[in-house]
Length: 435
Image (tube, rainbow, N blue to C red):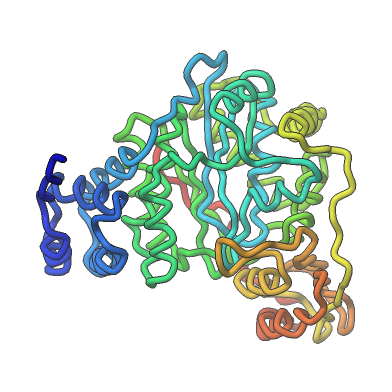
């Protein structure tokens, strides 16, 4: 039996180098990511390195190399190969009521691009696209690469789970960061997102970087840093990449919760729906089409004439779902009332997201189940006039013992000012990076 070859580096030396503010060499980065994937570097060692990166950062070259090493840990797809139309993907950094992928993917496909939307599940207060789609009876998230390619050619859009072999190093590190207080590291967020998106092999990518209380990035400066880092990583890898910085101080739309958000997304595809959801869907669609090189098409027309809805129905049916089926509804509801007469000037996104999570719409651990019908339905948004005692929100859950903790999350989440007051509501799109 051949003796095992010695490792070229020692994990402790790599940790010390970053702890002391140094830049890791390409060889160190390649080794530590590969060794962690092979379980040669222990969880506690990678935890220490992740904290050192959080505290001391990474150079652009380090971040690019780290991203490349994450990609190299698994397979690399080329979902654009052999298709009759260009591909464009979108990624959101996560927010409350952020159901934009659901109307966006079929809308962009209806306009002439193919959308390979490899998505994930929710964790904590931010919802997951796969959890939302799985509220549709019969719909399945797991597809083979061949199935994805066929659906992209036949339908133009697919929303599905990323395969286990796509950047497996990221799957391990993502879970570790969540329990070690290192989620907020810009280089680690950027490399986590971009390693999977670059590995997909899409032609173009539009990033929706959320800013505000309901987002990972609470302030505009940090969000812009993240956007610039990701745009640089994509551009360096040959992917046309653009980022929009969008507001997440107030929930998007009027729902937060899986089946509730599917229902609202269908309203948008039918030509209705909340104005902010429609506006952001169109803004991102225009960026995706431009990045994919599709000219002369206005996505607003595809919403209005039903083409986007047609693609939605075909997309859902192609993955075993019934687009006409009744969506799950929670067995129990509880109404939160407006505290006073006046104008609603603040509705905190984080509080609404935590309430939806506590009602059963989200999970604390990856293996936890979610309730398809659970969540929060809003009856007013900032700028609306309200009267004391009118319904402000309806809480939905199958387990009414959850109502108490959901209401605790909402304490202090709402401000009502005297009539005539104007809410300080930011623009929906705060900035644009790249392009």
